[in-house]
Length: 149
Length: 407
Picture: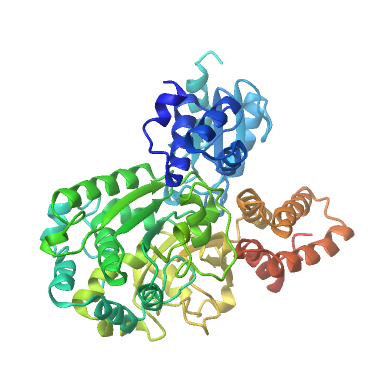
């Protein structure tokens, strides 16, 4: 869908700025500089305003990120359920470092998603997986990347 | 034991409109329209002394009264369901299990303060809860419970759901309002309070979803009866999300007169083979309760040694690596610091560096000095309470002499 088409789903009112940015992000996977310009013109606000909002929220990407975004919850509850071990295993198995991002994948910590009872929780491209172990996490990531990885 | 919030939950099934009506749902709303003036609804809430369940514990009656007396039009009503305190899942569970109970609270509240436009701000990650709320909204519109002339009265209310985009700070009311206005979710200076100058500059109520879930019960049974449950200066029941080294971790509804020890017992006690080191009440911004304080009662009363906050209980055993928990707290607050004020943005970042060195065994003399300065700065100089929150746990770790063992 073109950005314009996504935007036309919203009335150009202030309260629709964030929902529209989210919709563009969902549609294209990220919010590019070009998209920021279009959103700004549509709502009649500055590009700086739109970019400021887009870059503020965790759920919106202002960079064209990796094919697979791996997020591990490290809030206290998941931490007591060995979240750190999962990060360490993923790091060593896929030879990446937490915080790094290459074209294939990026690995980062995320905040609580309220599924503490089913922890530890990880997210792969936004989909939540619960009761994760190191082995389960590695398997899931392999499935996302294609099994030969 | 009296249950208000979870009374009608059917395990594993969300209550739809039919189910909710069957258990007496929207009876309170009908009573309000038939017998009560808005001012009487506010008076009933004041009598109940129901306090805000989001964490701050501000009496809902006073908030409603403040907005009801405002002359400016329009006014707005916002239900805060942006739950994101680590270890909490009460609001999400309420929305998933009994969404209409929240909606009934919103409609009664909107009537009481004279609002015709309300929003429900929900954490963007809560997909299932969002679907349940959307379905409930649709059912309400189709059954004359929302829209024009609700239940044959002259009262109109439009309720809109608004999804957040992942920011802890948006649970703070002024940041939430900024977010709704399409801005960065940064907190605003107070005063003016949202009750005078909130959404789009108009008087606005922001109430937590758990708080609103008690409203219908209070209207039906009377504020006086609610005020008699539990502790007198912190009445009513509360949802506790109990997790960690306990046998039956889960969500429990209890009156707020239980000691920390009783809360742990409710969740089946500490797991066999584990030894309790401390419990943390109210998520990562909550106080630490060592063994010596297990008889304290967490509540919203001013004299409470342990504030109940959002009501999560994390039981930490002696098996846990305390350094990892310290890191978990600071990682969270560093990530969620909005960046508006320097002490919080830089303070959490530097503190994280120090705690990482502590974890790696590189903690030096300079770090020790900086640690205390940073704690003071975060505790005293940040724009909003997030900075203060980031060191609550760490301060307690120092207070109860646990830091010594780590260095």
